[in-house]
Every structure is written in C-alpha cells, then in structure tokens.
Length: 461
Image 1 (cartoon, rainbow, N blue to C red):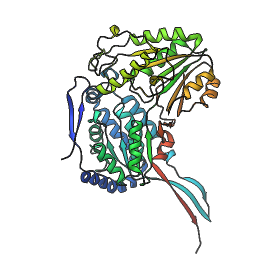
Image 2 (cartoon, rainbow, N blue to C red):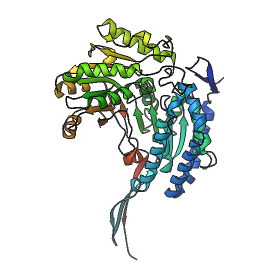
Image 3 (tube, helix red, strand yellow):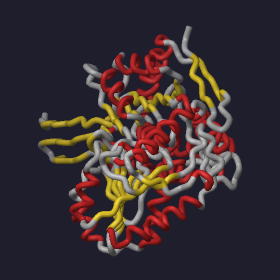
Image 4 (cartoon, rainbow, N blue to C red):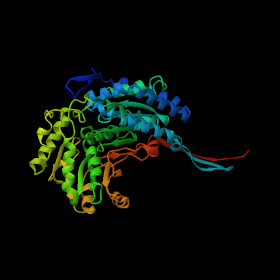
C-alpha cells in the first residue's frame, strides 16, 4: 500500500489535506510522459513558449484569494501579506523579457568557409522539489525558466504545502501541452528512487542540508546535474555611518517576516558599538509591535510556525543560549498568544557569542541575536564564521566600503541597505553548506540548458 502524505495545519493542528503518494511505477510513467511531451514542446518557437508560460502565471493570479487562504492554513503565513504573487509575477516577467537574449546562440564565425556556433539546448525533464516556506516563489525560480527554455517539468511540493503543486497544475492545465507540466505526490523514498532512475536532465531541490545530502546520494552515479539551496545563517552588519532607523526596520523585518522562516532571513546582527544600545532598544520595540495570532485574521502580522516541531527546535536553541549567558529581551507577557506549540513569539537575544548554536546554526524562526563589534575586520570574521553562505546585509552610507567588504564575505549575495530580497536580474546562488547552483538571471537559463557546439566546414561542390 502506498504512503499517505498529510498536511497538518499549524493553525489548529488538524489534518488540512492528504493525498496518496504515487507508486514507483506511476512515478516512472509520469516521467515517461514528460520525456515524450518535451520533444514537441522544445519545437515550439521560444516567443510562443514564453507567452504560454506567462498565460499560466496569469491564471495562477486568478486563484489568488484561494491560494492566500490555503497558504495560511497549510503553513501559517498571515493573509494580510497576499501570498507570494508580487515575487512570482516579477520573476516571470523578467525571465520572459531576457529569454531570447539568454538563450541566443554564441556565434564565433559564420563565413563562406566555416560555421562555428554554440547553441543552448533544453536538458529534457526538470524535477523541481519545492519547500514549504515559500512554495510558489521557490518553485517559480525553476519552473518558469525551465518551461520557457523548452523543458518539461515535474513538480513535487512539500507535505506541509501539499496543495501548491495542484494549483500550479491547475494554472497550466489547457495552456501547456499535456505532459509538459506535471505535479506528483511522493514520499522521501519515492523521490529518491525516481532520481536514482536517471530520468531527469536536472534536479532542483530547496530544503535542509540533510535533505540536500539525501538528494546527492540518490543522484550518485547518474551524472544528473543538481541545483541545491540548503538554507543559511544570514548576517547583517550595521556600520557606524549607517542610517540607524532604516537599518532597524530593514533588518528586523528580514528577521521576523514569515515568522523567521526564510532561507535568506536575517538570523544574526553585528552592530558597531557606537550604535549598539540604540539599535537594540529600537529592535526590541520593533519586535514588540508585531501581532502574533491566527493567520486568517487580517490584523495578524505573525502567524504560527509551519509545524510544532519547528517551533520546538527554535525554543531549544533559545533556551540553550540563555542557559549559556544570553539575555532574552522580549518578556513572555508581551505575547500571551505564544502557546508553547506552533505559535511562537519573536525574540531578541543579546550577550550572545559564537559558542552558541543560535549564532552559528540555522534557527529558521522569529529569533535574532545581536552582538557589538569594533571594526569591519571583527564583523567580517564573525560573518564568515558560519557553515552557510547565502546572503549578507551591509548597512553604511559608503557603497565603496561595502563593495570592498562584500568581496571578502563568503556568501552568494551581498545586500547594501536592504535585506531578504531576491532580484531576478542577479543570480541567486550560495556557497559552503548553502549548496550549489544558479537560479534566475541569465545564468538561471544556463543551468536549465546545455551547450551544443557546431563546427561546420563548408565545402563547395
């Protein structure tokens, strides 16, 4: 008997959705349909493919009210934020606008003697394994350019956001040729078996480091290219010439939005000692203004974490830090809605150091540790003292100083005077345990295609 995949709602602890996992045979049949459909899809002119994908995105937008409510029930994001449509639309529009340029042949010579050219060919079938924290935004980074480039796509949603894949399928149904986009429901064993069957031209996974290792093991020996985004412990650094109010607002939103469940969320902040006390005071005041509660209430700014076990892990990190000498500045009475379960109040920690897990391991919750620093060199050493490297956020009025420092930070993206944002015009990438690969920008198209070279020597009859 096949496993049943269940989404337990963090709102009330009830099962919100459940679906049977596909058998190995059914999953392989889906991959076979995708391979067959991809051949015809790749023959469709690029401009037409782009237009059809964008029509699917338009149809996805038509389901906005339903999707926003489903996200609240599935993973706890407040309805007031309107889902993920702003980012999805921005990325779809931008990737469509650069598709022709990104996929254009590289011409070395086209003379009466030789044709020497590199073309971009679709890899075939792309497997997108999406996470629960931003299930539409992360999926669209792969789904949109993969389809535009002429690939077929098989999508698997996380169990916590089980219905997301069905909405993607609804959006493309009747728009794309049958088999070009398919949503599948799989358990971990089924996912790994499908990857090991060597049916994909590219696999993209967003999730935990442990999950990334499992994907690599499943793909071992298949030579299947992988894109892996495995989280972060992203730092912010506030320099002595920063606009303090702006820095507090940007960094605290980056730390607490989505209850801190953001791969590129701010999890640790280093502040020049000159501003440390003022920054901490303002950060605590910012956190206290949040409203924790039912995500279906438009007044709520922070919903529950996506699962009770996620909240439990965050509480454990905070408790360990406090036992080791850290001070928690948000008193429990400020957030009586914190129920010891999935509903978790925000927290600001000081007197922290890098011996504590909360400053080095991924927390993925509404908690931020703040440390004073004396110099750029001290801040740099602390920012690089992490197994992760996704983004870093610098706050200064001197862009040249930020650029010099940014080139020495072990990270994928460096922000100046902003945080927690994904710009589709620049490559989304990481280093160290954050994973490997390139999403969005022109490089995102290159990850989802392969080069084919032509060297023709022309012979006249």
